[in-house]
Image (cartoon, rainbow, N blue to C red):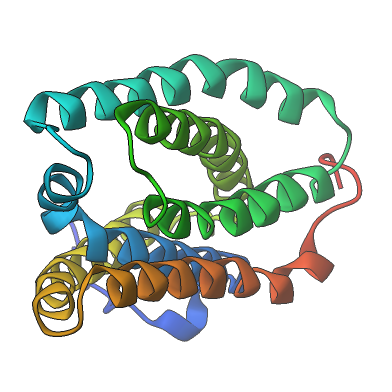
Length: 208
């Protein structure tokens, strides 16, 4: 007897949990905002900080990644210990809101040490955002749709980042770095505000 093959179902956005939709949308705005900066960040630093070279950008990136990496585990442990999901929501919301400040801070840096401080702060904010975002997403992902929902999230965010990279270069050339960084800040802030509709769906107890 031949085994019947279940027909492939097309992805239906309406069938996805509203929490997953808003989380994806929020991250799309935040990632898109920083995607605007990505392609020209090194150029901006070299042009802005006197005598700066790409080595300064490399050190700054290292500071961000090390800070983020070392901070995520204790932050994730804290999130798991606090009862309920609403702490996760507020960590994520304020983390995104603080993210939106970073592009504006780039406008004021004049020395490598100021850049390093900004990247250190970005690393701290990222250490708050990533565990809380993943915790909420994991709990609310629709059973049986884990693959497609993770795939849809990554596809949308990657495409958003790709278009943002192209647009960011055009904005920098046409309007200057100031408009570019302000635009990135606004995108990140919109990402934070986009989380507000899911607050009512956060469980008071993680076992609810």
